[in-house]
Amino acid sequence: MKKGQKTKTKVETELDTGIVNRTMVFKTMLLSSLKFNPLNPTIRTDETHSTFKALLSNIRKNGLLMPIAIANNNMVIEGNRRLKALQILKVKKVPVVVHNSTSHLTFDDLFVACNEDTMKLNACQELERYLNGAKVKTSTYYAIKKVEDIGGRKTLRQIVNVNKSPITFSIGLSQVRTYTGRTDKAFLRLALKWMLHTGSAYRLKAAINEFIPVPRIISAIENQTPLVQKWHKGFKPLTEGENLTTIPVQSIQVNGNNEVVGYTAT
Image 1: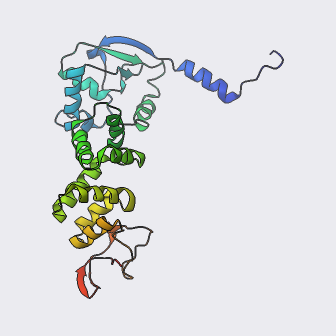
Image 2 (image 1 turned 180 degrees about the vertical axis):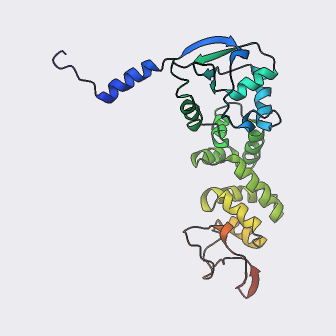
Image 3 (image 1 turned 30 degrees about the vertical axis):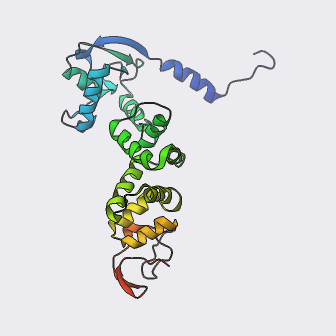
């Protein structure tokens, strides 16, 4: 070894040789030569399932966008659903990526590895794409437009910043509109602001589902104050925060009147 040359650590050497030993080969194969993973959950290839129907429609429209990953014995590591869809579409040949010559020995480990670290686009990520001018799923699009119509793009950016789903805010708007009877945009904008900065979309929906009196909800939204300011001593939750779904319902005295709630506001 030359003077001054850095010696590789054992880990670095293993990483280098490990990656070399795991080299994959891209090729085109007959679809009929591929084998389904017998340990793949059956619901994933159920032709009647809505998600499988969506995949089938996607492939029919756009073709296969990602090759199927297989072990060296032709067992599918990643792409069982695509294989089933291609069979239905009567495709003869398919692009595949074949793992190294020992991949059949570690097949199930590879299968688990392919599925445990996947990161599907969630509604918040789709919202970020929408703000950048990209296409999003139809269901997410309608939710985004409902929120945008009330709060504008500024609110959409705030929802991305707090890593929340626009669908949750859309549902919150629909519920508060129906429950309170208030349809004016000024009030609904305040509802969005409340969900973002004072409470949350979940807390608002939970309060409505608990039949919190309408005047109290309207007052909290208009004044941007929490729905729960003081816990009734018999109903204080064991953990911090407003866990509305675990509070037992009971009639208590609030301002001289009986109200069926588990907490009080001051």
